[in-house]
Length: 412
Image (cartoon, rainbow, N blue to C red; front, side, top):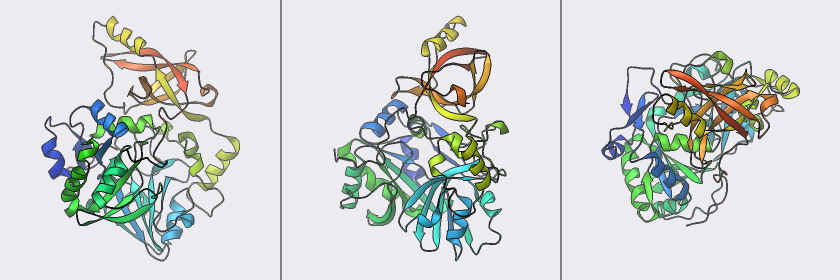
């Protein structure tokens, strides 16, 4: 997710608004864009996501339009869910897999017309192009044409209603409709990557700045604030949401853009290993990875994804032994840590950071299936300056915080 492969480097369509607010000049690379890492402090921004309303710049998400007579058939072939069931104005979360049933990436598929779809997620253009032969479709990369502003939090609906002068109380999760904000046409999707009630606002790049102004003005009475990448990354970890690279190695051929977090090929994962099994429709027609996934569904997985609560006092001791002040990761760790049980390696831990929701150091565990029961005690190897140490951890169920994104939201 956050990285850069090319010498090209640019601000997002909201850069004219986010840059003046980034007084500490904290930037992070996400694909060929830079986004604000933190505006004020991550804890304050995370509280806005959880308790009030926050805006997050998600513009670097890749966006691909699929159109043509075979748009539905092609989309159905490359994703694991049944595209024929997606209604116009509806969005499906889904993984897409290679022939071996390993996840290439995951994201959202929108049906924008009878013969038109849009996919958003980690860059997958080269991979998608490898499979267009035999389909009457056009695949257009429109990533740079649009900005995406994610409006998240329990007061997000109130902000949106103020901005649009419209009632959004009956707007369900994973639906899409057009609206006017500041006189500009905006596509509003009931979506988000934080686990909270929220919306993703997609707008033409040329109109992004004025829309930002309109949303911030509408949020003045609702505690709205901009949130940077760190707050969003912690929020998605607490919600149990993975990203390619940090949490799993992408299957399929390497795309020219996308996650540059290099991890071992053994960390390629199936949807079943990533808690995405409910998003695999084996009863639809042929799709990439179907036979491999069918076999796996019959015999079960060798590994599973769990939550890990990591003993902060153990980690503190490792620092103190080296004469250092204890340090808590301020952003989820993007590289895997070894997980051990009874002296043997049983898996990996990822996205480790301090979780306010869990009131603990926490992260994901991808463990051998025999060690996934809640309450199982394991050890996690961590890096401390120039050495390693092991700390105690306990398996728990995910997510770390109740998901509120699909629930109706009271206007606070």
